[in-house]
Structure formats: structure tokens, C-alpha cells
Amino acid sequence: MTTRHIQNLIDGAWVGDPVKERRNPAADDDVVAVTPVSDPGVVEEAVTAARRAQPGWAVLPAPARGAILMNAADILRRRHGEVARDLVREEGKTLAEARGEVQRAIDVLRYFGSEGWRLGGQVLPSATPDTMVYTRREPLGVVGLITPWNFPIAIPAWKMAPALVSGNAVVIKPADVTPVALHHLVAALVEAGLPAGVLNVVHGPGRSVGEALVGDTRVSGVSFTGSTEVGMRIHHVVGARRGRVQLEMGGKNALVVLDDADAEAAARVAAVGGFGLTGQACTATSRVICTPGVRERFMAAIAEQAGRYRPGDGLGDGVLMGPVVTEQQLAADVAAVQKARADGAEIVAGGEEADGLLFPATVLDGVRPDSAAARDEIFGPVIAVLEAGDLDEAIDLVNDSRYGLTAGICTRSLSAAQHFAHSAQVGVVKVNRPTAGLDLNVPFGGTKDSSTNTFREQGPTAVEFYTWSKSVYLGWD
Ligand SMILES: NC(=O)C1=CN([C@@H]2O[C@H](COP(=O)(O)OP(=O)(O)OC[C@H]3O[C@@H](n4cnc5c(N)ncnc54)[C@H](OP(=O)(O)O)[C@@H]3O)[C@@H](O)[C@H]2O)C=CC1
Ligand SMILES: O=C(O)CCC(=O)C(=O)O
Image 1: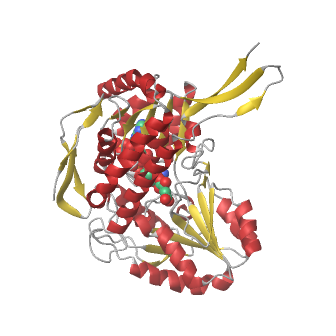
Image 2: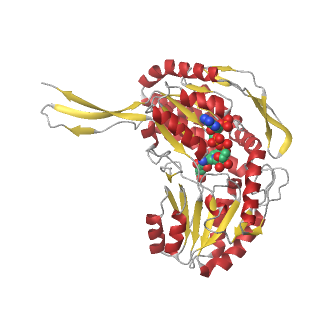
Image 3: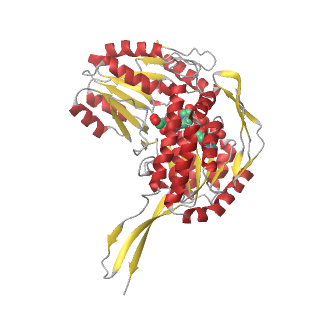
């Protein structure tokens, strides 16, 4: 297996000594990558380079910027298999999940590449004679992107692509443990013709490099995906200088299963949302709320599903669930299940016994709404099952959370589905579909502690975060 020697990208040059190892979570003897451990001085250089490059990039016609994203998509497509295997090795996804994520990054580049032909404003009537009014979208300037390990190529792609096509220069700090997938994306953009300095990458710890990026007053906007704790801190720092902030943080996403649902189908939906991606998605199904008539059938079906998601090396045949990403995340998963047991939950599948970083798909029954298992994000393959008397009680439970990212319902009733869709205090509602898994052309974001609930990511609205609106009055005599 190849070890990737990865460097920072500053002003078009690959620099920095790769010293820090990342090992495969499924095979500790497999060194996937070595990366630099940068200090805040490197961030300073990166932002300086970005500042220098941005005006030249912004005056290129938007279709020319978009064409570079399109070229990068083609380059990445040719490397699809190699990138997907590296992604399995560094993050622990299954090969099918990794292939899907790489394809998503390619499609995101294509989508925003073609946005280059559509970026524009509005033409409006003026109250003044012989005057035309139109709006333009101006880039913010230099934007900082801070990304997590759980979608190490798709999330950087869906932040970078709208930022770049709308004329910004970018400095990105990827998650420390997953440098390789991002490197493939960045290499494709460089080979596709991105001018030096327009995209800069700094590897290193969040608490030093990430903080330096967030704290640099030349950075006009920061887009972050990760924990609520770090996100809130970023909001505080960037907000204090009236910078623009976009945060995608945690979730405690619930799936409601009503009496009229097909219990087996609902269990499959819950398992894809809760155990797929090893439960390591902010959109993962973390709570299932059953009404009494379906509960018994659902419990039998979800226990059977948990048995199918036996954890293993994501490169292995037929493996539906890969390992947990790190020891640190494993410790959090184990502690959450132990706490749930101590709080009186019954473990009907899985449990806290891990084999290395292989953690079993776990189902907790009899979870009290006020307990940690019902309230705190776990970020592992753990589903807490709660009971509600009827749909309205279920909706109250869904909304009784500090988070508001996604929610789902399994039902055959159109009116129940509609009532739920309109009452759930979340950014994304799914009916008879897993809470995780998003279309790249659809706005994404949440409410409450899940998001800044202002600028949505993905889809046509994504460029709004990276631009501001200017109104031009054009008069003639
Ligand atoms: N919403 C989501 O999709 C995600 C949520 N999470 C949640 O967060 C928990 C912890 O995961 P973790 O990876 O530690 O998440 P973090 O929020 O710590 O990390 C996310 C990103 O922020 C960086 N970062 C960390 N500290 C700072 C800081 N002080 N200033 C600026 N940037 C910083 C990280 O860098 P570095 O990697 O170097 O620490 C990483 O690039 C998970 O258990 C899960 O609950 C995690 C990942 C994604
Ligand atoms: O569910 C998805 O497809 C995306 C999830 C996501 O954005 C995240 O976990 O950060």
C-alpha cells in the first residue's frame, strides 16, 4: 500500500515537511499518509498569497473560472478508483460509500462549474427616468474553510467550488486525520489550471492552525463543518469582527415510525441512516421514535438489520460498515453506550465491546427522553429508540432537542407526512427515506445549534454565502 507524502499548498508551491503519520483505522500497520504539522506562520503566508491572487481571479470571466472546475472534475473522474481506495484507508468508509463520496465531489465540481454560466444579479425598474438598475454579486475576497474528517473530499468540494466560481481566493485547513482525499481534490484543481495563490492548503492542528485562520482579520468569511463546540467558538471570533460565518455542526436526528408504516422497510431506512457511514454523519439517524402499534415489529426488524451491519475493513467484500475513525471517537461511542446502560436503556443489539476500532451497530431500547442517549450527539452507529403515544407527541419529541438538522418519518399517510414536514423544526425533512444522504443541488443546513441558519450550503443558494450584493444605478441623458 502506498504512503502518500502530503505537503501544504502555498501560492502555487507544494511546501512543508511531511512528518505526521495517519494510519488506516482498519489496519494499524498501514501508514496512509504523512503530513506537515504547520504553525500559524504558514497560515499568515497562505492568507497573504490568497490576498495577492484574489483580484486577478475575480476579474476572470465567471465561465472561465467554471471551466477550471469542470476540468478538475474530469481529472478526478479519471482517478476515481484510486481516490476512493485512499478514502477508505484514511477514513474507514466502505468502498461503496467512498466511491459515492468521490462521485459526489466530481458532481459538485461540475454543478458549480456550470454555475459560472449563470452567476448574475437582477435587473430592476428604477423610479428615475432614463435609469436602469441592476445588482451584481461581488466575491467576499479571501475565505477560510475548515472541514471535518467524515466527508473529507465532498465537504471541501461543496465549500470550495461555490467559493472559487464566485471569484474568491481560498485558504483551507482540512481535518488532521484525513489529509489524502483533500489532497487529490486540490491536486486536480491545480492541474486543471487554477492560478497560483487562488487556493491554499495548510495542514496542522485545529487549535493552532485553525485558530490562526479564523483569527486572521484579512479573512472575510469562514465556512466550517464540525463540532458545535468549535463552531460556536468560530462564530464568536469571526462574528466579533463582523465577518461572515457559515456553520454546519451537530445533529440528533430523529426518525418517526408510525403505526401504519411497513416495519421492515422502516428498519431498513433507520439502518441506512444510523449505521451507514458508521453513523459518522451529522445527518445520521440517532433517535427512532415509534408509536405503540409498530414498536414490537420495528424492534425485531432493526435488531435484524444491526446484525447485517457487522463492522469490518471497508475494502473487504460485502462489508456494510467500516471502522470508527479514531481511538478518540471510539472512546466517545463506548462512553455513550455505557452511560445509556447506566441510565436504564436496554441494549437489544451491539453494545460497548469493540474489536480494535470495529464498533458494533448498536440499538438501545427504553431510552428516556431526558437521558443523554436521547439528547446528545454520539456520532457513532448507535440508534436510541423512544416511544410516543401518537404523531403529535412524536413531533414534540423530535423538536425537544438543541439540534435541528434533519428528521424523517415512515408512514403511508400523506396527511401525516405533510403535518410532520411542516412541524419539524429542522432544515431537512425526509419521508420514507433515511435522514442521512443529500442531493448536491438542494440547499442544506439546519436550525438551532445545528447551523447558523442563515446561508445554506449546496444547491443554487450556496454562492450567496461567498458573495455580497451590490446595486448599480445606470443613468443616461
Ligand atoms: N457536523 C459534522 O459533520 C461533524 C461533527 N463532528 C462532531 O465533532 C466531534 C469531534 O470531532 P472533531 O473532529 O474533533 O471535530 P472538530 O470540530 O474538533 O473538528 C472539525 C474541524 O475543525 C478543526 N478545529 C478544531 N479545533 C479548532 C479550533 N479551535 N479552531 C479552528 N478549527 C478547529 C479541526 O482540526 P483538527 O482535525 O486538526 O482537530 C477540523 O478541521 C464528533 O464526535 C462529532 O460529534 C465531527 C466531524 C464532523
Ligand atoms: O448526509 C449527507 O449526505 C451529508 C452529511 C454531512 O454533511 C455531514 O455529516 O457533515
